[in-house]
Image (cartoon, rainbow, N blue to C red; front, side, top):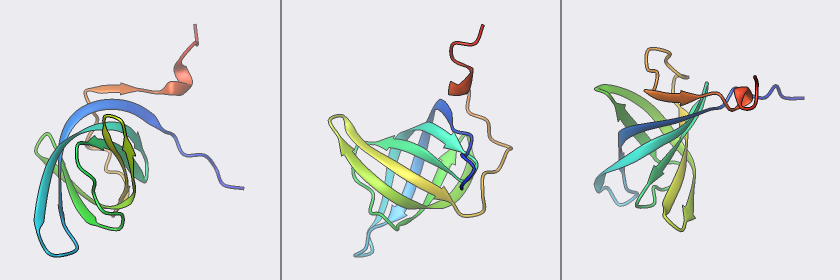
Length: 105
């Protein structure tokens, strides 16, 4: 049985960069919405190919990972990112919430 990972909700403006399969370099602003030890969830306006290596920049720090999945929504795309070297704790989003604490008095 797998141990569930801590998933935190957040809101932080980020930039992601990747290379399309045909070689074009892309850059897209997005919103970091979820964070967990091995990855993150980012909302963007255009699709990012699954399997693409990405660089995510937040507050002048760069993190590397790969796209696990990209799902279309009515308001854009949700990109699941897996960190290349695991989560680096030097970055803490300004708006961070642990959903496990909701409803606790």
